Amino acid sequence: RRRGAGSGIKARQSCAFIENHMAVRARAADTHEGEITLNAELIAVGTEILLGDIVNTDAQLISQGLSELGINVFYQTVVGDNPARLERVVREAKDRADIIITTGGLGPTLDDLTKETLATVFGKKMALHQPSLDRLTEFFNKIGREMTKNNEKQAWLPEGCTVFTNLWGTAPGCAFEADGKHVLMLPGPPRECNPMWKECAMPYLYKLAGGCIVSRNIRVFGLGESNMENILHDMMEKSANPTIAPYARTSECFARVTAKADTPAECEKMLDPVVDEILKLLGDDVYGVDVDSLEQVVGDGLRERKLTLAVAESCTGGLLSKRLTDIPGASDYYLGGVCSYSNSVKEKVLGVKKETLDTVGAVSPETAEQMAVGVANALGSDIGVGITGIAGPGGGTEDKPTGLVYISVWYDGKFFTRKMQSSLGRDRVRMQAASTALDLIRRHIF
Image 1: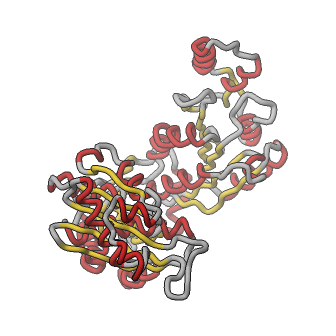
Image 2: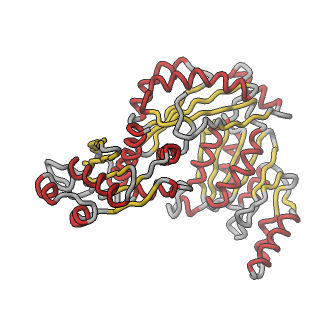
Image 3: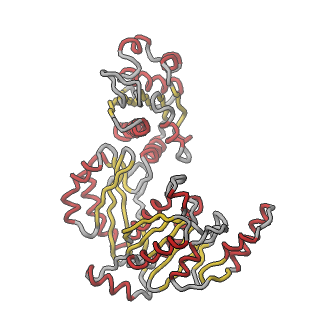
């Protein structure tokens, strides 16, 4: 099987069986021939989200996690810090969802009323959770601040709930079951919600997943989502289990293949032939299965081959260097970079010929190639990368429009050069150019 360099296939698994949920089983059996299909509704609580002061990244994280568990998300709602409106939203969710997940409104202030409102809707009493109060007291003692009386509010939770200890903040999360529904409440700040979702909420939901679910992500660069879907169309139409779903990301896309069965081994057996067929269909545009990123794959490949890399960037302004050094241990293969934004730096530091700059210009395949070999010579690396272009929004001409970029990789006396043209804005141009450089290394050197 084709894999990302240095990476094994890591199947993300969630395996457990439903206990004491006969009502859910019966409901699912009516429409899915006994297969258990749960649906969740997400409710974000916070006026600051409605005002646009912050972006609701919690919903994206949770939706992705629920997808991995095989739990559908049919509705997402944002509601302000108003108990009457929140109660209406919760009652609507109660009528149409098996699982309700809220984020926000768990803090110490008067407008933090999520717990109290959900307790009211589901007929739960509030009770003091002494371990949470003790943790709060210890926290304030540790930072040398007086704990005001309103902070105790965070330790009052619906009676009989499962408490999610907040190791990343002060407000605990919680979960309970009532009226045949599962209710989970998580803090709003992403630095707290993200780890609590992964460490506390997802394990809580595993038991609702209905058997085992195993997914593999086939990562692709060089094909658009629509092209990839067109290639996989017949497979997607015929495949019910495993399912195949295409997704787009910035400058790349991936296909997620998900199998459901009683055991992980059965899921793996079902996945293997489907993944193999997709790899054959997509060919070299696949850069890995269950790998994190292009920069991770390239980094693993360089380390495995004991090769070093240096980069010269103009329009990307150091973005490629940033992505490479985001990976821990990048010093094993990355020597450094030159941000050669001006022609004088290209000429004096990288050795780009003045004649080249005067005749074909800075944005040209010749300049990109001379930048690539120049930075390799200057820093003593095995591989050199040169990127030069017009990221926009201005600066383009009829001959050299905005979004035109040339990327070149030099290795073992050879150049691998590609012309790129994009009209999707400055950030996308820069990201795509950096990804193209990584992809050239992957395709031609590994």
